[in-house]
Length: 66
Image 1: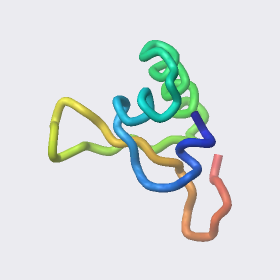
Image 2: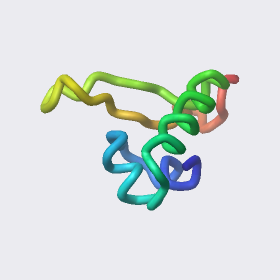
Image 3: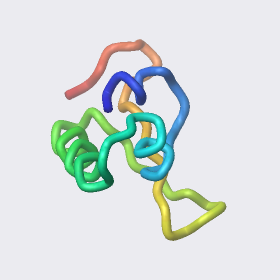
């Protein structure tokens, strides 16, 4: 999951399921773990309010802050 997010950009949960070929439950679990560790940023997806966008929490300096 991290490797897909590392490629850059932001992904919806559906995008991540498609990119990783992992089951939805596994993707949800991985996202929750990354969020707990403050590695993941969750943002609102304005095109479809039912979904969120996920990306890595990497500041401009390129060093993670967790």
